[in-house]
Image (tube, rainbow over the protein chains, first blue to last red):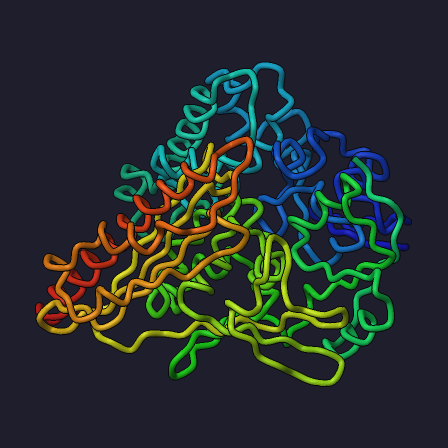
Length: 177
Length: 298
């Protein structure tokens, strides 16, 4: 079956069997191998992608079901080649990864949480990543990474007092990041 | 972990979907796929054809009616979890939803899917049985309605026939001004299957006497069960000996036994969690009364 998928802002086509999961299609047809195949039955969260901004298991959806969604993979987060997103950078800074297998899923899950809530409590973070298994870190540094990223995003989005006072009219630059 | 081949169809209407299902008894409905796809991956299910109903607009949405909340079968669990309408009119369902799977599976999993799957430890069927919800079913010859306790007949077994499709779930809304709810669950780890889950809802009058009470238990036996707690009616929370009433009502429960929990453990936990859920529901209802006396909403 022919499918046309919106992946990281680009419309891409593939010809797949109905039984091919979105995960295998991303990895094999589009060579987006940042989405990892772990358990392949919805337990581990290594294959997490965002569908319309919401974390979802790419192994629990067939590619033929995925048309019409905005699909975001880990490859779609960085603002430019060679750069890291705020959340990716926070994971590096706090050593929020060891072997790295769960990391793309963790980062996308964290990104979705922070898009909805830029001041999550520790419980919010733990609940958000409760569907993602990490066998290396013990989760402590992952939670720290999300807290750190939240702090940076809040500060990046906060109006700067000095700029506000100096220029009471429109701020010089809009934009979220 | 790759499913066996199947044909995939996405009909444009529910009538067309029912026709496809009736014409092929090895066809299966797929909606959110959060339970079906693992079963396909492990080849525990090998349907010839998947009929995708997820995008049928006629099956989507949360509707407030005079005495009920009607939730379309393909409404995603996350939409119910975040719905203000459900939170106001059906707080027991809002309380139960965080226990359903985990956040990514709730993003895709549907209410109708959980109902049709009929896992004995699932929370949405438990709330449906506790409150006496009705399941609306579409079949090739028309539409029927079935009470939840007739719909669920065993583990992963329901009364739906080939060619039937769950259309919506109609949860009754209690009209008394002071309604309180409680929900408790024990599982091996966060978001795993419940060994025991207890859901309770009570309505109190102005003096704090119980007008109506419902208690349901999931995970204990082969399907969610409504427990008779009618001895509570007419009593105030303090006089009603909730632990005694729950213990008496759960003494002879048929409980299942497996690697994780024995039948006697499940029965014991059922009495404890049932008591806690009812006590929470009484406290919640009393607090609502106090708040409305202050003039605040609810």
